[in-house]
Length: 193
Picture 1: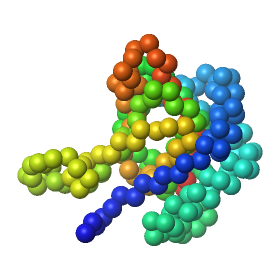
Picture 2 (picture 1 turned 180 degrees about the horizontal axis):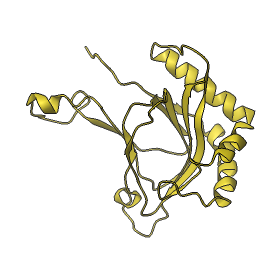
Picture 3 (picture 1 turned 90 degrees about the vertical axis):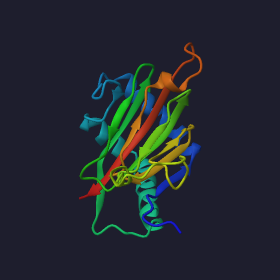
Picture 4 (picture 1 turned 90 degrees about the horizontal axis):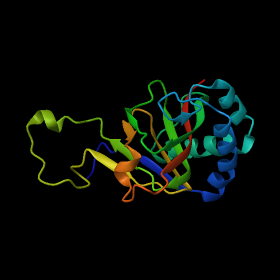
């Protein structure tokens, strides 16, 4: 019997991500934002406002957020909003260190384009076993401290915002240094109004 699960939501919707991709490409081609050392509109509130004008994006992301929360056995206490909604592109030599989204409830990553890209690594915040003196015999579903998602275009991952996650250096996951490496995403965080 498994207890204290950390639920991760997975949806495949290439039709949605293909429709978002040209919008993201246009935004990123006109943006010089490099908040974390790679191309991102995270800190640009005018881009968030622009993305919020696409009702079909807003409606779909809200719908899947409500469905995810319901599926894991919860509901929102009051109205929700996007605390952040942005596009990003991680290319060669770039990464994003382990982080969480404090003050948020649900986070989501929509993979718009993935060419030889690095995975999304998610870590269990409850590493108490390390302090208990137990020795891990093998890394399996029950004993693993992390999970690796190798994204493909059309994948959408949802998770509670307290889950630590990162994107390692792109080159570490490519077997050919001459290949184009790219990871374009639409990212959102949900919080209470």
